[in-house]
Each structure stands twice: as structure tokens, then as C-alpha cells.
Image 1 (cartoon, rainbow, N blue to C red):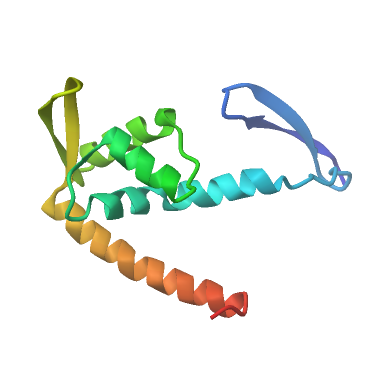
Image 2 (spheres, rainbow, N blue to C red):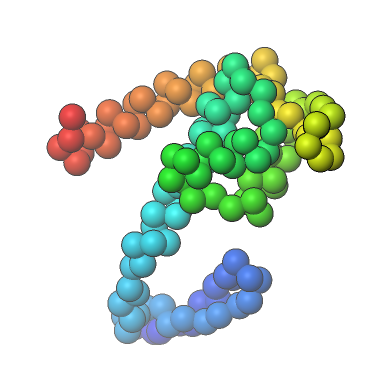
Length: 137
């Protein structure tokens, strides 16, 4: 059997090589990376839920997520808000602030509300399935 070298793109656009095949090294799982990926997987759902019925500006959204211990940084939320807006799920409006520059308030569009409703159903199904598999009620 032949051992091959595969090239892997990492987040920093650097290419690294690793051995693949019968002599593949055992990779060590990092629980912090897995936890971060789990949070990222539900971040869009959480943002849409936060905006459901409430217009908010980015700092308020970020604060709500941090209060919920989602461990999100500003560099993550702004691109995500832009992506959700470009997908037609959010709109925004500018409002003057009494304490500083104008603020961009985000709101759900009708499409965003329907999308959120679908995610609510999916989340309930996923949570139930996960609880069954992990024997939790």
C-alpha cells in the first residue's frame, strides 16, 4: 500500500502537508476547537432569534450573545450580519444616537421571519434527536 501526502488549506491560507495512508498519525482532538465549531453552527440561528420582534444594533446583538456565553467577537458578527442582509434575511436602518455616531439597527425581513420559523423547527428536531442519543431529557 502506498502512502500519499495530501495538501491541506488552513484558515490562514497557508498550505500544510500531512501524511495520509496506512501510517497516518493519530490526530489529537482539541475540545476548545470543537466547542467553537458548535457555537459557530448555531450563531446565525441565535442572531435571527435575537432580532425576532426586536430591532437591535450590532453592539446590542453582541452583548446579548456574550451574556448567553456564546463567546463571539466583533470580527465575527459584522461579516455575519452582512451575509444575512445580503441573503435577504435582514434589513437595516440608520438612527441618530444621543451618545455618539448614528447606529445601524438591524431588523428581520419577512423572508428572515420565515427562515427563522424553519430553523426553530429544525432546532427542536435536532435538540430532541441529540437528547435521545445522549440519553438526556
